[in-house]
Length: 277
Image (cartoon, rainbow, N blue to C red; front, side, top):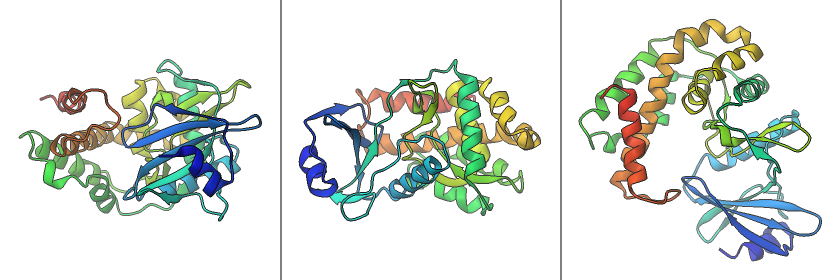
């Protein structure tokens, strides 16, 4: 992609330097800069229906005081442009140092702030789980996958009504960035969606270990009973998503975001171990 050309044509920005950044599993990312500004250009597939809602959420949360690497509207007032068959957005660059798994307090606290600022009415959990797991045709790649996924879904539905919010969707430690002024930003909103808060909490627990949960509950003590009742169930849901996702990647030989095809198999094996197989 001609990143400098895209920035000039759609955002009226004229970079003096463009560098490739490490992208996610489903995106390509560049850092562009001039004397007075730095931005990130991010490109995803044209079928990524969650891309623009995630950008809109990042903008709303930034307005609420949570730094997110908010999107910049282009010359035509849009956050997203379609370029060469891909969806493209420009984000404010967040300078700082990514957190690590030991930064439990900062991770849990900021995730709790996000859920407080972005609460929504609850939806239908069974429908949401079907949306979350669109890999039906890949669940028979290995014999353990389908029973594990279906069991996790059934246990989640049995929990009954849950609290919902807009979710980050992928709160690994490296998505949290401590800035030079000490504030922590939460970036990478490509997996954002409406859903049960327990999914984000379980994801944070999976990525960042157990102490992130009490850190979260110090910010959201009102959710203590719900988290204690449903966290283990949603950990299985989170690993079910991982199992379905990597089964899909293996089935379709998708290699974006990884250095070796074995990384897909490792992701599936990690999910398998979580189910005791």
